[in-house]
Image 1 (cartoon, helix red, strand yellow):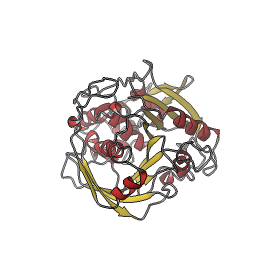
Image 2 (tube, rainbow, N blue to C red; image 1 turned 135 degrees about the horizontal axis):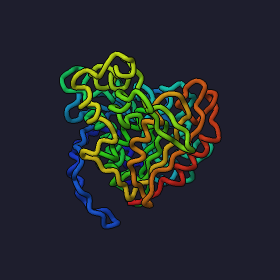
Image 3 (tube, one colour; image 1 turned 180 degrees about the horizontal axis):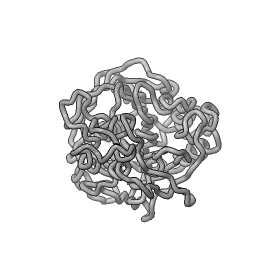
Image 4 (cartoon, rainbow, N blue to C red; image 1 turned 90 degrees about the vertical axis):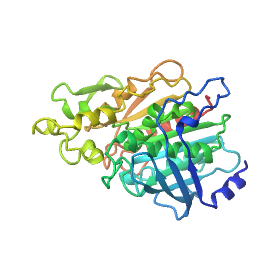
Length: 370
């Protein structure tokens, strides 16, 4: 399908619904796809005005998304195409992706530069450029059911990111096995990408995953209950604490609505029932998980900082065997003075050499592997 035809396709409302288990094709490599993962949801999309930090010349769509055992949620998708034939497609999901695209919500400068670099419009520029797909939601997509209609299980909530990634693969990338299909995700958004790979079968079509200060959802139970020796080693031997913050700002409290990480505040154990849902929602939970991605590369860029995100990420990263038979590649940089998670800038506005390194990494690594 040509770029012109694709754009015409977007003019009408698009309603896409499927079950992940229906993906039972055999890839060009002869690899049989086994439908053993969680079901995806559905997305409907209609044209709208773009939110903050959409890529240059993007066409934007209001989306309504449904997933099993979650509230209906709205949001926005920005789709941009490069001049000429694209080299592939890159999906970008930001941290706390509410109301603005990748980077805008962190106060860390114009992170839409990532999308523009991938399009070939900013330095370092991809040539040829890639299609880019950006997503944001109107409310916190990590909360499965703010209405209380369903239990707040994060595994169910992560279906939203997994559905968005599959939607981009089907309707922007057009299921093209001859070009790279890749995901870059930051902070909370990295949980969407990691969960999609591990529990929703995305490792069967995502060629490269670049995680940015993520995933924070490695092991919620250990993060809430550990009282001593609570650290993981990242990069060159540096150890960081994986303890979740206590109180109402903790991720389990925000996303699960199930009390707080009280063990860390000295207030006693978790509320009864919290432990089970925190274990179930953690990325290192082996139940239903796939930790071997034979045709997917995984690189993460972690920010040296005092909070728990890089250390939490290691619970997942240490489980993985990726393309080539080894583990993922992890690099560490100092964070921004305005946002400790933003390793791509030190002053909140100007990209650093780390930005250039990561962009060139994506450009070189987003190649067809399936």
